[in-house]
Image (cartoon, rainbow, N blue to C red; front, side, top):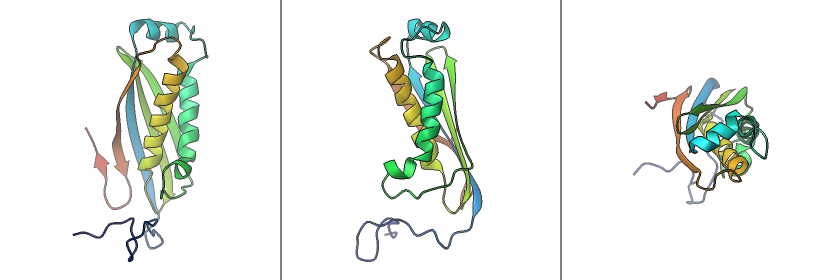
Length: 155
């Protein structure tokens, strides 16, 4: 059996020691989908949602969340992000979200990108729940990871 990374020699939970890892540029992209109906999309486009612009508020919320990931996810390392960004695009059946996180460091930024896109999706839900009650968030996923030992591209 492979040694579990988040346990010490005595079997206690511990943060992974990254002190011996090389500093590299690390980047991760995550995505999510928020399904809303045509009437809600129209309200967004016409800027008549009661709480303001859900897409811009969600972008800011996602960026803020990426910066605080280590406070939300146990055992995540604190990472000095070089970049955190969230995009929100209206599509036929809802809103597609993409989050990007970049750092030069010893550990990856997948959790920062995933946290950013998740919080952005939850923010859209919160901003639009007065307009539509049956909003569905789906497809939260890692799309790409570069830097470190291995690169991942999920297509």
